[in-house]
Length: 65
Image 1: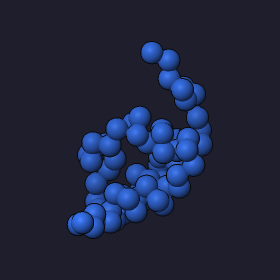
Image 2: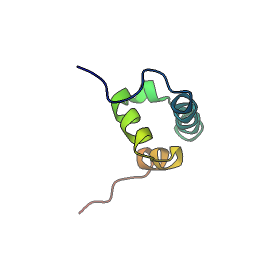
Image 3: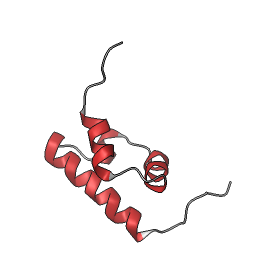
Image 4: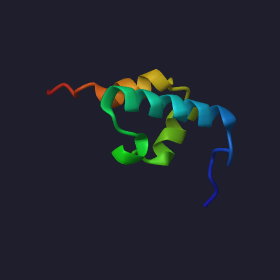
């Protein structure tokens, strides 16, 4: 199955590093330790979601309905 994203993207590497660094500073864990799927990260990056938004989504509690 072909991937819709490039095999290597330096911008993605930097973006992912920003997300990982922020998570380590805020929670003391990495993306790998949290079990975040690479495909989900690629999807968010290629759809223009900022690194800050990704970190916010992972660190903010979900509101109960």
